[in-house]
Amino acid sequence: MIIFSSILITLALIFYSSGIWSERFARNLKPWHVATFWCGFCFDVAGTFIMHLMANGAFDLSKSHTLTGQIALWVMLVHAIWATLVIRKGSLKSKKEFHKYSIIVWLIWLIPYFGGMYLGMTH
Image 1 (cartoon, rainbow, N blue to C red):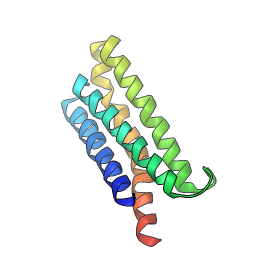
Image 2 (image 1 turned 30 degrees about the vertical axis):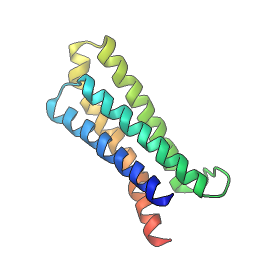
Image 3 (image 1 turned 90 degrees about the vertical axis):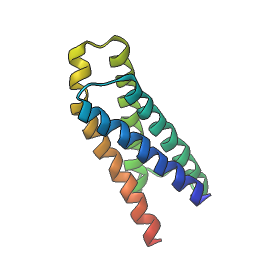
């Protein structure tokens, strides 16, 4: 199960990073960027769920990795919803300025990604 969850989390990294960086370089939010945000989020949720099942314990927010992971998931969800709304109803200006916030969300997401990698290598 650890291999499967690691693959899912890595797919989240690939999809989310490609969406964030392609949107940043384009400087204009496009529908396919939004699709990559949602794919990255879904892969992250699936991988996180499997890791939670393997943890054999209660959901413990006092552990820094659990807390940062939850924060990242919620921020990713808000980001994907916001991107969806900008694509559906947003002005051209909002589509062009959206990328300024995406990089912050991506950096927040990287904290538990690399934290989990570190934990996996040290335990």
